[in-house]
Image 1 (tube, rainbow, N blue to C red):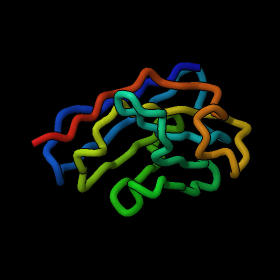
Image 2 (cartoon, one colour):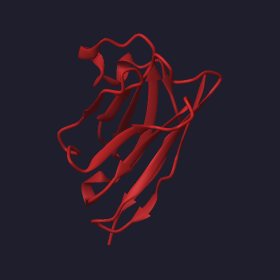
Image 3 (spheres, rainbow, N blue to C red):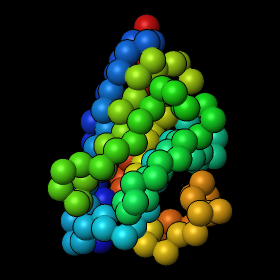
Amino acid sequence: VQLQASGGGLVQPGGSLRLSCAASGRTFRQSTVGWFHQAPGKEREFVAAIRWAPGHTYYGDSVKGRFTVSKGNAQNTVYLQMTSLKLEDTAVYYCAMDSRLILSSIRQAGEYDYWGQGTQVTVSS
């Protein structure tokens, strides 16, 4: 299984970006797909996750109301729509997946089996 995160870039505060996570080798069916970010010198932090079935979503406190995680039409794509971006959102964003996660582990990076390579998001004026 390979994951490819894309869509990062440079954006001004208050702007928007949409990240994509695409899987090859299998689909996201029956999986949990998570988004994490990591800023320089900091630990990887939970951003959002979606359980493919039934489509329940979960968010970190710092992004609630601003970010939306969603399924793509194809069963191998997940999106992270980021709005009202702040300077502190600057980080490398990673997508990850796992097919056996329990709900209590959904925010724990160490519980995900597969990871993408990350995409840089820079929020700057």
